[in-house]
Length: 178
Image (cartoon, rainbow, N blue to C red; front, side, top):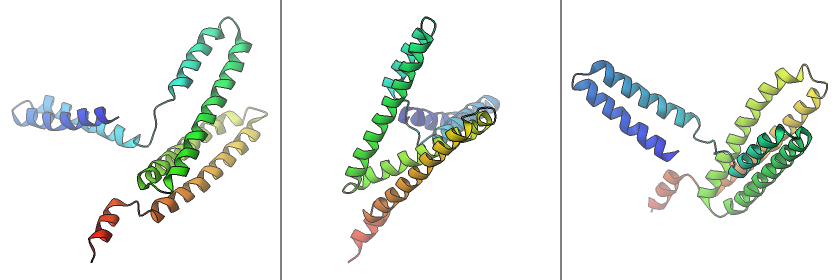
């Protein structure tokens, strides 16, 4: 993500310079492109890239789908379960380390915020599907339980951030006081 932010941050002043040197429309378009890129990066700043192991498994499922759909479904379910397990292990490790490291507490909080945001978006999509499906209510209930658990974990992470004095500006101010 960092290289995209740097690239967009360079494009904006470049577009402004081109606009000031006489290419008003071209410079404005380039600067606007840079601003849109920065806005997109800001919007998805808490999102993590997709798990590469999961992507490899999904590619394998897509190849297997044509020849053996049942095996492909089993492989996909196993791949998703493994990805969930890996994510939970990472979160547990972050929770353990967040107690003593303020930066890890920030990372944990951001990861949980992103998980909650993704869960809400998935629930909105699932609500449309749930109207036509007999198991839709059960899926929505499970999604609500996951969201409630994530909100609880996020509240604990917020407490860790506050307790660790993880706000850098506050820590600098507090350390500068006599």
